[in-house]
Image 1 (cartoon, rainbow, N blue to C red):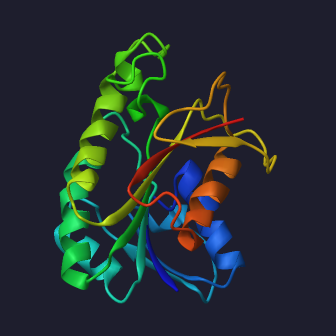
Image 2: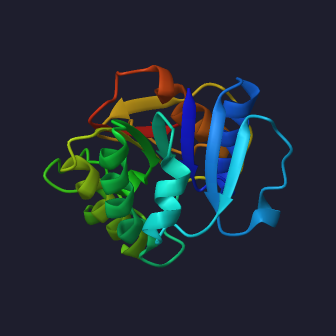
Amino acid sequence: MNICLFGATGRVGSVILENALSNQISVQALVRDLEKLNMDSGGLKVMTGNVLNEEDIAQTMKGTDIVISALNTGGNSTLSQSMPLIINNMKREGIKRIITIGTAGILQARSAPHLYRFQSSESKRKSTRDAEEHLKAYLLLKASGLDWTVVCPTYLPVGERLGQYRYEKDILPENPSSISIYDTGDFAFQQLFSNKFIGSRVGLTY
């Protein structure tokens, strides 16, 4: 297996990368700053570039089997702008499977299933900007025809690896609390070996 990984230097992306390399899975990662990914591993190929540059995406994706995107919003529109480029190049390369990290805000609200969680009283966040950005990326994936899964953690502190958590398809489990970056990254990595949540968002919490 050869993974194309975007967001490898981020909080969850770095956990996914660690999982892949410790399981002898090859990774091709695209990073803006090479110094942020100072790892010496025979299974890791690092390219420098930008996810808003289609040529950089194409080079990183070449020869891979599966795409994982742990890109976050960063307070801008990089997430939604890069997703069409990722989708187009996946189709060009004949890659069907993509796993991404989203946010619990784009799950359906348990109390009002016709709303996304960030649109409902269930969400405690005052700003909806990040959730709206994640929603744009999710809707692009939903319409893509690819085998996608969006892992949607709730409040995401660094925390520690507990190895026990709850998850539910398209909604957040009842009485959510938080979920660490380690358990989120581990769960996302496990989706490489499962078809259970293809075509679904997955709400994740302790």
